[in-house]
Length: 104
Image (cartoon, rainbow, N blue to C red; front, side, top):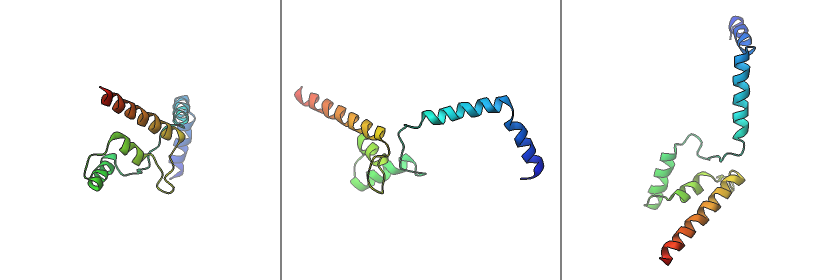
């Protein structure tokens, strides 16, 4: 990067508009700190889904897909506590719905 471009960037970084936008973006990033992460990297979810379907011969359920995409490959632990809590609560809800349908 040449000196002229660097000087233009320095001037831009001093604008109030840039500082406001930068602060807002920082706040947005901070608010996602507890967001549920995915382990797929650059692999699209549709490809992960397709691979799961090919491996089992059936469409994976939402819970199976969530389980597959929210656990670390290295030690199979959850990516965050929030991801685990979401899975557990959704799994319990599915079990409850299934149980109620059996009782009917």
